[in-house]
Length: 559
Image (tube, rainbow, N blue to C red; front, top):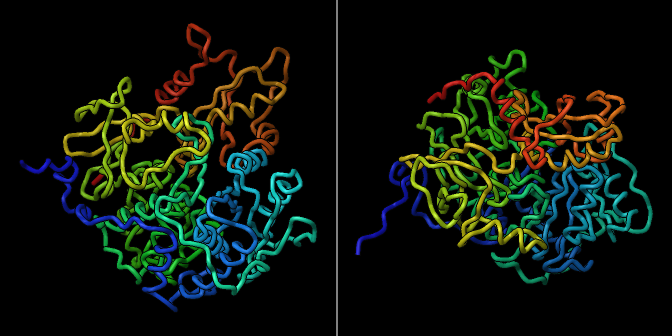
């Protein structure tokens, strides 16, 4: 009996990655141990000019895990992290997952109601934060509301002076210095298994409603392995020798997996930066000789617009990645000319940890192209009315994906989980097609999700908040092209009879307590009426088509 034919993408792109190498499907403690074993006293992080060695990182992780265990944190418990990019994040992340407990990432961009929702949904009663203005107040508020039993505060000054003055930590019930938990007592908690849930990462899923995707140790470590096996394009990265800029927020799945976990596994030095600053990025590349930088379009555009960028020495960069949102072709071409490197593009989702696909370097770019599946993954296009029926090349349907990185389901939502899968395939909600060479492209987003500066933004959440405004009768929110953010939200509003109009600035002020900064509409338009179906349902699609008709024709792709 002959062997089954290889998938189209392996036949047409046999050299882009190690297709036949087995994936490393293990646990996060094992992933960390591999980096420590390889590099020892070499630096794992450069933060504020100071170095944190791999062995020191491992010691701090074990000491905190020991203290958390003594404090009652056990396998299956949920512990929330409300942290910026700081060494506290990887130390806490690896300590929590060492115990088999679950990390709940809270975004610094989350509005008050979003923080409360995430804590309630996951049952996290303990939260770790730092004493910076954008973080400590939100944690203390949740404590005061009875949503937490304890807030553990890592002193920002532990890592040297930053450019934001820290807040005093109140001496009150339920607040404890994180440093008090570090313990030298032997750690006796059993190691987690690959199938154990490691992270509860919030996403809109396929319905646009925020829910916690359950990502296991095996999901995350297999995703890391997939990225490591991809070798197409540019100068190859050599494990243990690279310097990697980490300015993307570690609470986001993109940075967590492709930057933190991937490069800890490789034993590379991570240049950890708390916020994006063009001058710091230029210094990291031209002076510290960073070899890899992953960013979102807003960062690349900011670099492109920096006066004198043409004279910067980018020769150390081996790998450049733009992800999280579409980058206009003409902008990408200008960036590549300046940095002397082609940008890696691809696709992924929170539910896939976020490994999905990559665009091979030799392929001509075109709108919507997301490339071929990473090694260890299978993708196909399925019929909308029958997700068990795979469609042939050229036909449009829903993109389905299967692999060891695909999440275990949505926490507390059995119906939503069941609806998101069919025969083991995850139904992504993205509409697309596959061509005769196995290249996939997205043609639409089934639920009209907006991706703004790399963050998922859900129109329904924005609409619900705007409906609370006393002047608003009806509202539709859609994503519109944004040269800086990739996409941004635009609100179309019908006012109540006799109600006064308001400005975009007024709307932002009203929404400040209701939405995160990344969710704020960037444009506002008043209408006498909004498009509706014959049965009275509001139709965002009509407005999306209206905007598309007004847009200039897309630029041609380039090699």
